[in-house]
Length: 474
Image 1 (cartoon, rainbow, N blue to C red):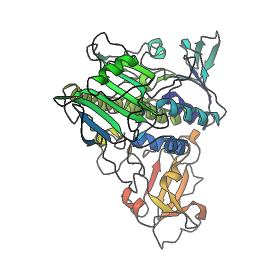
Image 2 (image 1 turned 60 degrees about the vertical axis):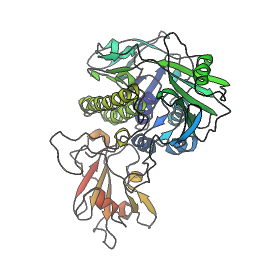
Image 3 (image 1 turned 135 degrees about the vertical axis):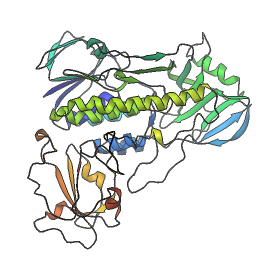
Image 4 (image 1 turned 180 degrees about the vertical axis):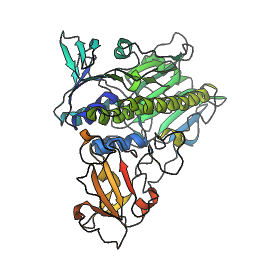
C-alpha cells in the first residue's frame, strides 16, 4: 500500500509515523521550502501525551518541554499575585500523564521527524501538491516538481487553506471575525524570569493586557496581546504595547509572529473516496484552550490504523468530526469569555485535556463501554517486574485483556479484529495468588497486584476486553 500525506505539521507527521510503523509505504510532502521555526501550538494536552507514548516519542517530548509555568500578574505596573492556567494534578493509576505540557511546535515537529526517519521516511520540503484526480482504485497526485504519482490513499493535512479540501470540493463553513485581532509571537525578554509566565495589564481592564509565557529550551517567551487596527506584528509594535503597562521590560529579540483572527470552521465531510482530511484541513479553532494541534494529532491517530488495515474508513469521519464539533464549542466559549473581559478567561479545565473523548454510541450507558478511552493501570509481569497496561498496548496491534477465567487461544481469529490487523496480543490479567490457567503462556500473564486494572475496567473474572490500536475499547 502507498499513501501520500500532504502537509508535514504535527498531524501529517503523526500519521506518517503510525503508517510507517505498520509497514505502509508513506510519502510526506510539504510546500514550505524550510521547516517551520516557532512556537505556534505549544500546548500538548494529556491525551496527546498518551498518543506520543504509544508512538515512541514521549521521552523526547518530556525532556525538551516543561509543565505550564505559573503566571505572575502585574497590574498598573505593580505585582498582583500568581495565577495558574491549570491546577497541577497528581498522576493516577488510570491517568499517568494528568497535566498539559509545553513545547514549541517546531521543536515537537523536529522530534516527530526524527522518529519518522527511524522508519526510513524523510519529509520532502518544497514539494507542493498542485492537483489530484481519483478513480475507484487509486489517487493520482500531481506535484510541483512535475511528478505525477499514483497512491492508494491521499490525506490532506495541509492546513486551513487546504488545497486537498478544495480539490475534492468539500465546503468549509464557519465564521471569521476581522474585527478581533490578536498578535502572537516569540520574543526574548532578558528582564523577565523564565521560570514564570507574566501578565501585564491595567487594573481596570486586565484582559486587554499582554500575556507572555516561557518557551522551554529556547530562552524566549510566547507573547500575546490584542492588536489595534493598522498595527503590524513587528517587535516595535510588541514593545510599544508592553510599554503601556510596564516601563522596565525590554524585548530584545523577535522570532515567529502572526496576527490571528477568530476563525471557526468545520469541514462538511472528512472523506471523498480515497482522499481524507485531517487536522486544520478539516477544522480550524481559536487558540483558546490549546485544542487545534492536539485535535489534529488525534485525527491522525484515529485514521492511521484504519488506513493500514483498510477497515472502518467511514467511521473515521463519524468519530472525529463529532469530536471536532465539541472541541470547537469549548474553544469558542473560552474565546467569548476572553473577549468579554472575564478575569478567569485564562483558566483551563479538564474539558480540554482530551481524556474524556469517547466514541461510544449515543444510547450507551455504563462507566466504561465500547468507544471509551482504555484506562492505564500498574501491573506486575510474570517475573514480578512492574509493567503498565500502556506498555502492553504500545505498538500497532489490537490488545485483548482476559481478566482471570479461561484462556482464549491467541491463534483463534477474533471477529472484532480486521484480518489485515493480525492476531491481537492477548494478556491474562490475574489477581494476586491466582494461578495461571492451564496452557497459558507465562510471558503473557500479568498480575493486577493492587487491583487497579480490575477497578478501572469494572471487570469480573472471565471478562474479555478488546482494545483498538488507538487506545479505545473495541
